[in-house]
Image (tube, rainbow, N blue to C red; front, side):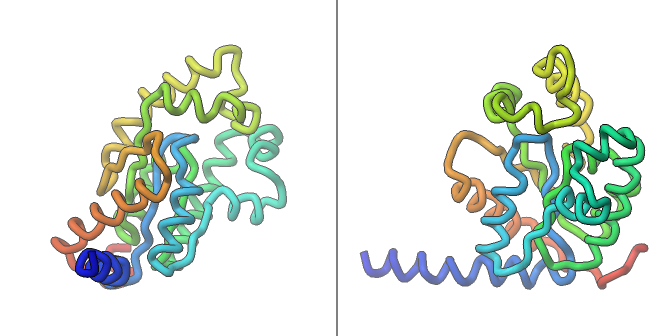
Length: 206
């Protein structure tokens, strides 16, 4: 019993330290559909690693002085996406950090390129039925789900976006378990990935 406890205590310190060292100046960038838990899981992950957590949508709202829903309503999706790309490009200079992005952010070619250079991307993947359960009570908060058939809209979005999400460095399933279990999966995957690749010099490849 004592040996197991000591080993667990050591891992609790060694794994975060190894991940942060492997990141260098890069950010951990969480991508995926609305409802996969990027913000809540991201906060827990950042706490475990002892680095800041940043939510791109929150930063966009600060910059615009209005909510994401209001930006969509007043200016349309193209203007929102343009502002989103600029904000994420700026945020990527602030690593190491855990950065949660909006569901459509990774669809932008330039944003994906910037993330490849200055981050390690993780696709939090969830099945459609899981997303529908999670979003069922909150669909009014999601501008893209303001349609006659939100479930069908979500299915189409998932079909369109999954091939792009699959370009992320890592894929971790967001399933119906406690978020700490998903954080543990992410940390295990990060250790394996970072062991095989040294962090690039900050700003290289820009």
